[in-house]
Amino acid sequence: MENLTKSKIYRRKAILSQTFLTTAALLVTANNGMTAGYSALLLPQIQAENSTLPTTEEQGSWIASIHSIVTPMGSLLSGPLMERFGRRTTLLFSLVPSLMGWVAIYMSKTHAALLIGRCFTAITTGLSAPPALVLLAETADPKLRGFLVGAPSTSFSIGILMIYVLNSLLPWQMVALVAATVPFMAFASFFVLPESPLWLAKANKNNEAAIALTWLRGGDAGKARQELELMELQQQQNKIREEAGKNKTSTSPLLSLPIFRALMVVNRPSASNRVVLTSIACFMLLKIGRRPMTISSGPDDRRDVSCEGKRAC
Image 1: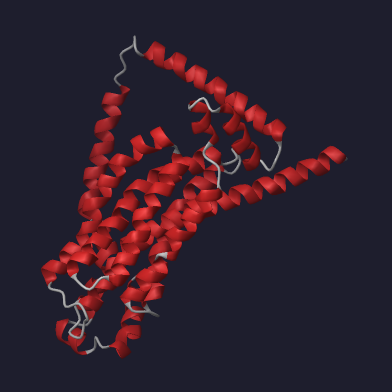
Image 2: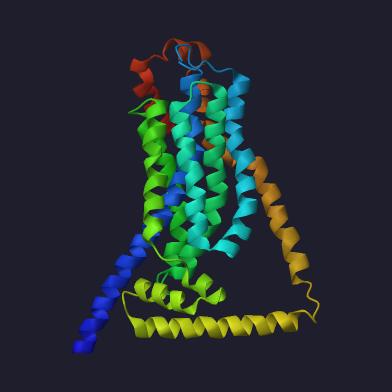
């Protein structure tokens, strides 16, 4: 009876621990969604006739597209960083540019400052997405892993929705300031959370891996020890396979890589990113027209415009 009670306590603590870590990771992906969707609300406001930051079509195009230009740069750095320094450390490092970027956007008085802020937030999108997914996969309980790994996609969409909702209530500068609280909360959460036990085990930090895994499993040291032993066994098997694979020639990577590349090429013409970045402006131009948009772009009409944008979604 006592063992059953302890098991329930461990289970509850484990759920709380993983919920805390999952929430922190979802804050990261929600922040990435807010970054992606921000230009959709920003462009109509700064291109309006009474804008405090008058913007041409060319300038607006750069403000919207800079996100897609800079994000891959962060993605290229993400893999080496999280393998060298760990998933948690990489996430902490990646959230700093986002916080700086949102504050820069809030304080921006020129297009250069606005572009710099957008660049910083875009770097975070590229840097943070891979380690957030990897950390979730490596720390989740096997029974919850499938559900938790799929959650970031939903969180990303919620981030876009949050930006649209904030736009209906606040001007673009205040939206940026409110958005800055999301990476701040994520940073504060990861500051107290443990590193991935799997990465610690790979780095031969077995004591730290045991402590981290015990916390994630609600204090159940026995279960944590079993999982850690399984990790070590899997690593040994992987090394054996790698050594054996050096002497074998396989054509499967040569076949799969072109297939993945072809899928990416087919996806690009769909312009999914373009729809996310400028959806509000496109809908308004098609349904309302340029002249009525200019006339009705005053502060009192901002709420009505946002409602139209929500319907477009």
